[in-house]
Image 1: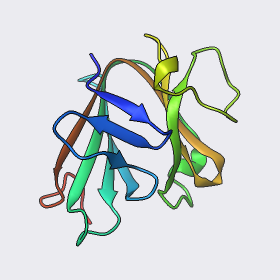
Image 2: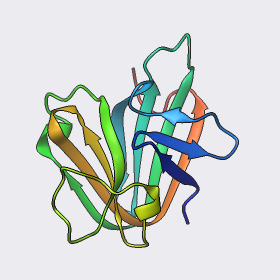
Image 3: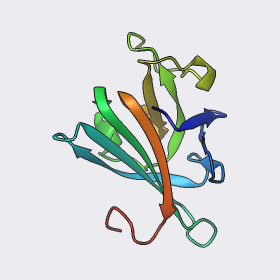
Image 4: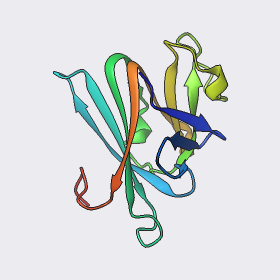
Length: 139
């Protein structure tokens, strides 16, 4: 199951929500991993709370692959450079597949500034949008 599509390599389109521009309007603030539930949640917060009072979660369940470059959590700004997909066997991170290139089993990739990547494959990928307060993570 997948309830969102990627547009323009940086935006998440979700029915009933405004277009979510992860590159210009949000920053990656954390990840919640629940091993027992086979679930990872990526959390993004709006950069300007006065303009956008939103928190976005991308939730992956029934995990098949997870890889996180060391720099994602060490010395990273949290700013997203691009989002897209990669075929499981493709390790060339210089380019990502757009939504039309998505196939079941493809890896979802968040590329950050400083060329750090977070790569997840799962059976289910869902997006959720909620008001910034209360947050799922501490400020």
